[in-house]
Image (cartoon, rainbow, N blue to C red; front, side, top):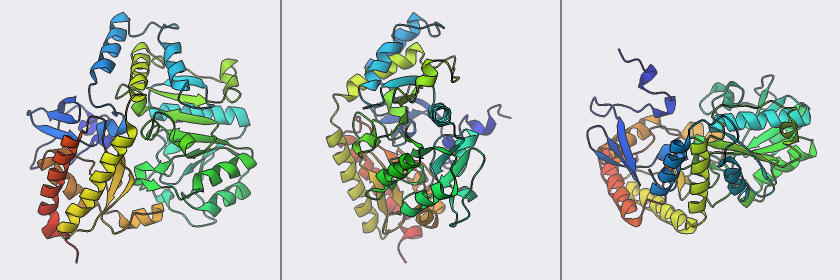
Length: 415
């Protein structure tokens, strides 16, 4: 009997067997994964968004290896920590104060603590079906949970968390009419973990304005989208003025690192040791080396070209399936998007839940894997591309989708 619960340490890694065989990855380089049988796959999960430069970037690996050689856990302040914070703060606008953590869930947890400490209020409002980490407080109302859909007047709530409906302009106003204990609202640039549901024009700014009007803070959860559209926070590009943000994933190119960034007056309680924080591995030398080196690379990267490459792929995927009698659409951005078995992308989670087709996405995952491409099997999954997904790789992806669509046509062709 295996000792590892469910064969994995994170449930997101669970994949269906292909012809009775489980997938175990041995190594990764650039845009590719290699399994324990020596087979090669184009990767579109990319550490669930953490890998943006491409797997095993030589310069990032070298910097991390040197940090490891210099001592993995020096306990006290070390020479790489301030430099990493300075480099990160150069990319985060007025959010100039930095606290490093180890995972996105930790960063969101710490941002929520900061908001509660600053406002003296107890509740955090999050987007229903949004994913802001797996800790108990903010996992409430995650995608597929019964709480993620609700009627007016029946808002799901706990002592520490309450929900609002994404893209519902009136619902956030109702929230503050119903509850005066809201410390902060967590915003995502799009509902990425619900299949890349895009924000309607003006929606994010509307939520921010209502929150600030009622004395609540705004936390941008940028763990997934931060640094993916450009070398900075997606919320700032949308014209937002958040008080705090959680970042992670892409800032370390796969090395475990995350951070809270915030306005100085919001984080003053931590500076004065009035608010507790900790973490044996927070801001460790390897993480800081990864951040400094990764950000230096991202500053030189051609994001516009990457996103255009991905948008071309989206158009090709839709056309390939259409040629085989299957209607699909995509939603999101060029370098992170979802695929829907539908003629149009969902605008709300309620629409997404009705469109979700687990049988189709599982069959698509298996067909693509057989063709040498790995993709999330969930109907709410995403396709990522990295800077190592060159034009050649994109063409290889199109071939894989062609093979998959041909295989699925008999079962899923339009009625």
